[in-house]
Amino acid sequence: MKGLIGKKLGMTRVFDEDGRSIPVTVLQCGPCPITQIKTHEIDGYSALQLGFGADRKVKRTPKPLIGHLAKAGATPMRLLREFRVDAVNDFTLGQELTVELFEDVQKVKVTGISKGRGFAGVIRRYGFQRGRETHGSHNHRVPGSIGACATPSRVHRGKKMPGRMGNDRVSVKNLSVVRVDKENNLLFVKGGVPGTRNGYILVEATRH
Image (tube, rainbow, N blue to C red):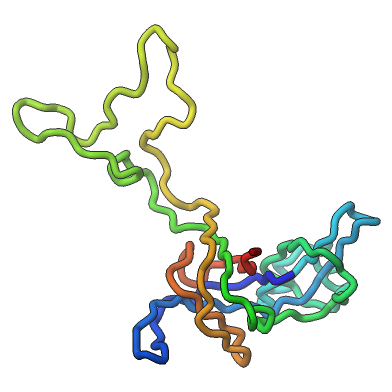
């Protein structure tokens, strides 16, 4: 298992040995304590539940969650997520996983919640072409015809129309790992990742 919960800190650039500038996103990955170990015998599958964000206030944490985390010797966490594993024998309850997991990883998948853009039309949302501005045209930024008349007498499911844009769970695969900072638990990946600054993300090693 090579997956951690993290936070997107922002973007910067680093230089390689040839002096070329590489745009990177800085991710804070871990430390993530193991708060629960799930096995085939009890739960039907093998997985590790990890926690992240130990700055959550006790008075704002439900008591059942406090008791659940106390079994692992962990303080209240802001985020709990599961990662599937092939075997749980190599892990112990309360063990902290750090960015060292990605030390020998070349590609990762990053999952986050994209930025919310509010209500948007079809031009901004899907890149539709606008209509004519002259010669009496009234079709400027409207989507146009959305369906037939008698057949099928309805609008097809999935039709691209105006609506809420962004604020969706998005995964970006095969991002190259440029640098691993073990002292500060920072991971530098090439390119952009979904989400706002200080937004929570999930980082998993890409399976080949």
